[in-house]
Amino acid sequence: MTTAPKLLARKPSARKPGIALPDRIAPLATLPVFHKLHGRRVVLAGATEGARWKAELLAAAGANVVVLAGEDADIAPFAALAESLAGRQDEGFGQLAITPRPWRPSDLEGAALAIADLDDPRDIEGFVAAARHAGVPVNIIDNPAFCDFQFGAIVNRSPLVIAISTDGAAPVFGQAIRAKIEALLPRGLAAWAKAARDWRPLVQAKRPDYALRRRFWERFTSRALAAPDRAPEEADRDALMQAFAGDANQPATGQVTFVGAGPGDPDLLTLKAVRALQAADIILFDDLVSAEVLELARREAQRMIVGKTGHGPSCKQGEINDVMVRLARQGKRVVRLKGGDPLVFGRASEELAACRAASIAVEIIPGITAAQGVAAALGISLTERKVARRVQFLTGHGEDGKLPADINWAAIADPGATTVLYMPRGTLAAFVARAIAAGLPGATPATAITYATRPNQREITARLDALPARVVETAPGPTLVLIGAVLRERLAAAQAATTDRVAQCA
Image (cartoon, rainbow, N blue to C red):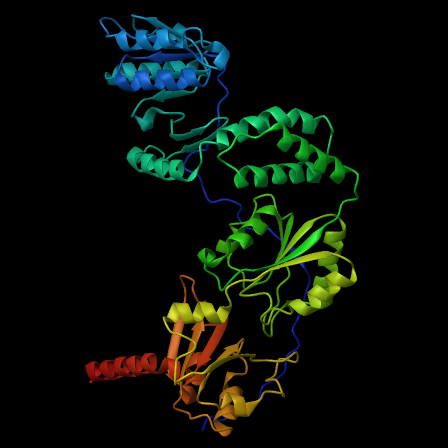
């Protein structure tokens, strides 16, 4: 029988809710920008098929393109393009002028961009040097080493435009990504994007603050995405402006949204959870929330860590409640982001009560529980006919850090139950000793899993009576313990692997 060591109760050290400053964005190979070219002169040297496509693209952006084709070049494709563009300036297209001579450094003075498709290395170097001397961004087609900027693959729902770049490494790959996005975005979104451009002056004329503007455009976006295949109508504009006027006449009201972050893998978040993160003004998050989940939040959202750690620095619950209510009263949309599901060992009831007492609107978005994440990561079912009739979740420690005094040990000893023990590292030996004393066999299969569903996931599977000593030897981290017959095959495999290693060493 495992003997439980004495657990020295340690009072968690004080910790204050604080602003977290994570990296907002990973390093970029290139900076994506959208260049205004309407009515501006762009110089294009060369008469290749690649140059012709760039001329068409630039003219579509409203540029007046000067093509310096070179001597003896075939300019027929460019002439045909120029003819098709003639008289279409009122649609937003630029003009195309063709000159059958080589480029000169003076051609680049005052140009918005300089682009060339040249073969001679000396000619390329001269063009790049001349462009940079003139202070003009330069692009050599299919020659990234000489480029100040590059053309990406484009998804055109203008004025909604999406560009994809691989930094010149794999244009075909970028085009494949473009095709995927093309298939996802209805073409009708172009009409909504044009409506946004047309209606923006109406919104700006009201001189709204940031919160009001964002609320208007959130409503606009919801309406557009709900009906992307139809053009917006005056009724849409009128309804949005009416709601906008109503918002302006009301005092700013915030809300708190409780969001389950799941066990750590960002792909396990619900769509509703992602939408809440994208709409948040401020996010109060726990230590158990992974950095990858936070990456899905709106970039401008402020992040504040309010976590608790077992026997470590912890924010007081009252302080968390006070911060949450104060921010919501300022009109902020607060997301209270909790690991797993907020309603399972997340102390959500206390925070919900604080919000309701302050008349703060609340919403709850459930998440994948840590237990579900662990079961999926292990590839097992928490229930199994004739073997595991029920599942029971319990916490491994009480408010004082010790094993809770009110555990139903008869239920824990039920061989037909799967037990999931949350936050058990400090009390696991004591729990195992009491469970075995209550009648649960020491040979019961058990698994301790740390950082479940994450790339650094660790697992220990052993007999229940041997598990505490194995867990003590491992590095700390968020840990869950599963106990029950549903793990029998994993235990058999772990024991067989141990036998094989011993035999090999012998």
